[in-house]
Image (cartoon, rainbow, N blue to C red; front, top):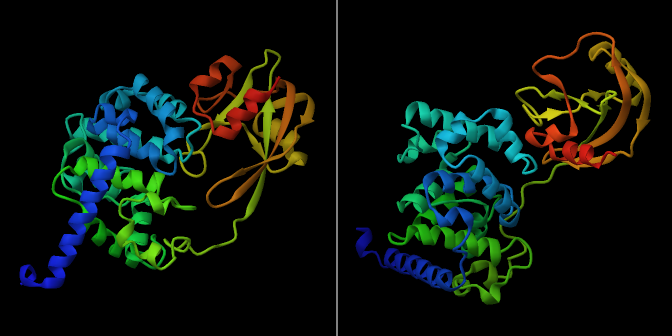
Length: 359
């Protein structure tokens, strides 16, 4: 029987001590006034968790506050136009998160009485949620005992237990999930969930961790064996290619800019952006043959680089103005917009910055 196994009893004692030490630290040093903590509804916790994926807290806070002010409930999000959702998200990046939020809200209205389901399997299956986010929602908003495993928690556990291997690999993830479940206490689950995320975000950071201030440093394998710089192990490196595109800033005599909605899949899916040409030499042909426009003059601007997770994009903007139509080119996904109207659109961050920089 496991209950009579001294090794098992020792592991349980250590796991309980880890949780107690972490909660004691959280009571004094943890973050307790983040916007999504002030009202821990499933909707607000969900929105905060999704925004925090790939994004730091200080960046998320103003976006979160603006989003919930505009769309305070899940039914409000479900009823909103996609353009409004993307406009509220514009600048946060990884726009599939916003599209998944919108789709999930609509599914919840259709199938779950306008709320997120309380069953973790059903919740995990919704677009953009997954196992760890579902657990975080139910733990923080509902107080249910579920282990989480976001990037901060993976780093804490990999160092604490000396776990080798890239955390994104199946075998390493399986080991880390087991450790996450072991450490999650049966009481104060919401506080523990925030505490272990805070520990990874503030002390057990990727570089220069503050081990001297860590409440659970005494049992840390990485600290004992001088492995904090090596754990968790990095994803195997691969070369990131560089691609190039030319963005056409076509402005008419009224100063309006022609924008196109991008396809439903791929980079910047469903966002509004500038028409593209392969290079500067083909710009006039794209204007004439695809857009039905003729430019009075074309002025190149300085190229700049935008970095995605899997490639770098070298962008060369061309101002084409004034343009006149040689045939009708407007449709639902290609329209003229004034500067004042751009704020209400979902635009990729580099495109928004480019347009805002124009005289």
